[in-house]
Length: 390
Image (cartoon, rainbow, N blue to C red):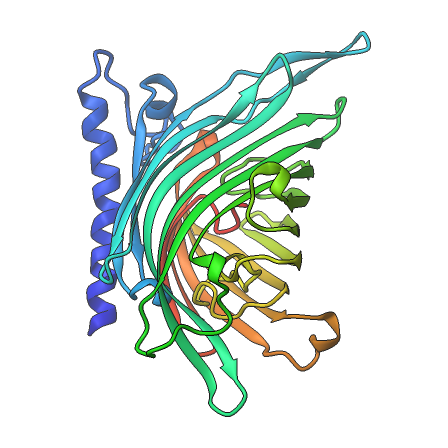
């Protein structure tokens, strides 16, 4: 019965999103159609291009680590960019430019977790530099898990007041699809143990209750996907190595590595396959809340942590009727402290299904709902574009 109530709320919020876009367009001086010129179906491409409109993407949160249920909204503004003539060493090529995206973020869950923030991604065309900026403030009540020798897995609850700031800039290398640049993370965190035990857990050091993480590192990416929202073909390969050090104003000294690959292939006219490989590794004195963890649909955030993790996922999208698609996906992963422990660490699995609607054909943007299951948990997600969004 509870699942049915959640499903109805998700459907209502998605419909509300569509209606808001259509009503907002009617108030512009120049009326903008929300019907596609090719098939007459509901489509917000022209609205986004001509009216510089926004999509108020709703969020339904069923994340067990932060209360199990909540909601919010992510108002997103998308501005299309015209292709430009790029020139390197006298050679000229017409180059497409990804849309600029500006948005906000606000959510609240039933355990009094909340967060507000804003983000921006775009391209400095003349400099051939892609950039990303994000900032937020949050009050996070979150559960972390540890396996104790004589007790087994135990849950520990914390309140964390956080101010994260993320900045990234990468420059295109020649006419290739390769980019290289810098990534910076600032994180101010005040932690309070709120669990039932009288004494705080021993995996938390004294400085972790109020500290600053300041990281700077390099980024290398290959990205030749056919669109940035819901790709049908292409690859995205990423590697970054960041150093947290007191010379940057950090209270911690450690390295954090992240590498991942997203691959998409059009198998037939109506079938698209996807493959994800993702891994992280930390070396040194990192805070417990920044340790690598298994990040897959249906798996609670930070439920499975270690000094390293490695996971893989497969998904298939079947465009079975006009603009409507069905999703099937599954994956496995492990979190561990040392690579010698990989074989004996817990195997985490996830599987699920969902649907998509082609909401903006000219952007290749699909939106829908997923439901996912893992070893002992499940969750719903409203999906804007793709689940793989790093």
